[in-house]
Length: 198
Image: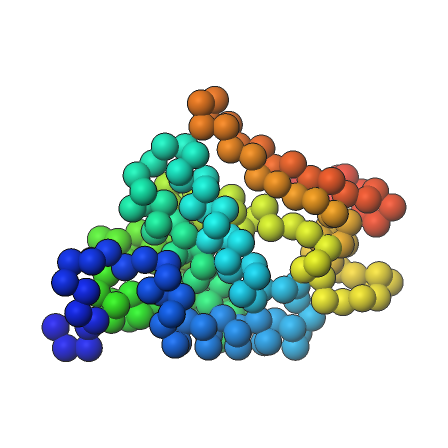
C-alpha cells in the first residue's frame, strides 16, 4: 500500500514509533505548549516513563508480550494531542496517531487497540476500554512527582501543582500473583493534604 513502511510482517515496536520524526516533534511541541500555559511537565521524560510503567503492568500481570508492547506504544504517545490543545487532547492524540501507525505498517486491529487507549486515557471522559487502555491509565496517573512542577511559586500553585509538588517518591507496585496494583506515594503534608489525592 502506498505510503506504508515495508515492515514485511515485522511488528511495529516502541523503538520504531519513537524514531518516527513526527512523533518526536509533536511530543516536544506539545510539552512546550503546556509549559506556555503553566501545566506540569508532559515531555520525553513523562512519555518514556508512562511507556515503561504501562509495559511493566502488562508483563507483571502475565499478558502477552505483544500486548505489553502496544501498551508501551500507547503510553509513549498518549499525550501527543497536546500539540493541538489541552482540551480534548486524548481524542486529538488518537486522531494524530492513526495515520502514523498506519504508515509504519501496523495491523488495523493493533492500531485500534492503541487508539482506544489514547482516546480514553483522560479521567473526565475516558474509560478503560481494553487491557492496554487500563495499563495506560494506571501508568499515566502514577507519574506524580515534584519534578513535574514547572511553577516555582507555591503561592500560585493549583491543585495539580500542589499534589505533584508534595510527592517526593511514587511507585506503582504490581503483584501479578495477587492481581493487585498499589500506588505507593511518599509526600510532604506541609505542602498539601492527603485528602487532595482522593
